[in-house]
Image 1: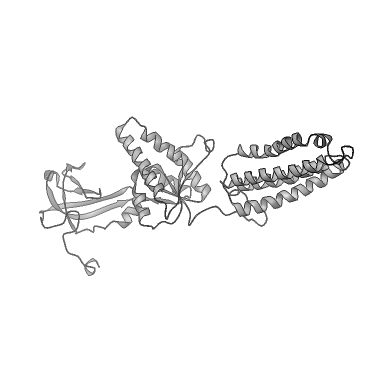
Image 2: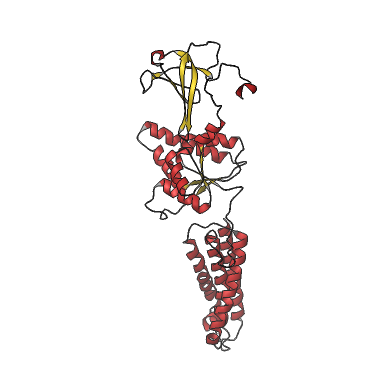
Length: 364
C-alpha cells in the first residue's frame, strides 16, 4: 500500500514537472536553442512522451517483488543519496551538455529518477542494508517482541489458538505462504484422515485471522525461487533466521533441526507439559484400561487430556475401571507417559485426579 502511494505521488510529481517544462517551452522562441525544437513545436505530444518516459522507472520497479517498507528511514536516506548522486552526475555531464538544448531536460530527468530509484531500493532491501561505517542497520518492522512463525503441525494441532485467547502472547504471528500451500495440499489429500487434518489446520488459521484484536496474524509472501530445492521445514528455519523470529511447532524433528541452527523454538508440547498438573509417585488416579500394552502383562489407559497411562500387571483389567498408584512419570518434548500399578478401584475417587487429599504442606 505504501509503495502504491509512493508510485502515485511520483506520477503526479512527474506529470506536474513535465507539464511545467512543456508549457515553458511552448512560449519560447524555437530559434533560441533553450529547448529542443520538437518540444517547442509539439508541446502536447512531447508532454505525453515525456510522462511515459518518466513512468518507465515505475514499471521497472513493479517488476521487482517482495518489498518490505520502512518509510521514515527508507525515504530519508533514499532522497539524500539520490540528491547527492544527481548532483554528482549533473556535475559530470554539465561540460558536455552546456551548449545544447538538452541540459535542462537531462537535469529534470536525473533529479526525478535518481531519488526515486534510491528510495525504492532502500525500501525493498532495508532488512539487509547495513552501513559499513558506523555499522548501522535498519530495524526490522516487528510489532511487539520477536515474531512467531507457525508451522503446519502447530496449525493442525490447534492449541495455538487457545494460547492466544489467554493474551499471554503480544508478538506478531507469521504464516509463510509455503506453509499455507502445504496445508492446502494436505486438505486436498485423498486420505480421509489426512484431509481432515488439513481442513482443521485451515479452520484454525481462519480463527486466528478472525480474532486479531490483540495479535496481528500476517501471511508472509516468500519468493518461490528462494531456497529452491529445500524442504518446508528447512525453508521455515531459514525464514526464521532471516526475520529474527521464533518457530512455533510440536514437530520433534523440526524442534531439533531449528535448535541446531540457532533458531529459538516454542514447542507446544513443552508449553502444555509445563502447565499440566504433575502426578507424583505415590499419588492415586482412577481410569479405565482400554487395551493391552506392548510389554507382558501391561494395560494401557488414557487420561482426559490424552496422556497415556501404562499399568503394570493390568492386562487382565482391560475394559474395567481401576485405581492406579503412580510409580513414575516420563515427560519429554514428544509428550508425557505415566507408569503405575493397580490398586482396588475407589468409586468415590475422581477420574484423572488424585484421590488422596493433599495440601501444600503435604508436598514438601
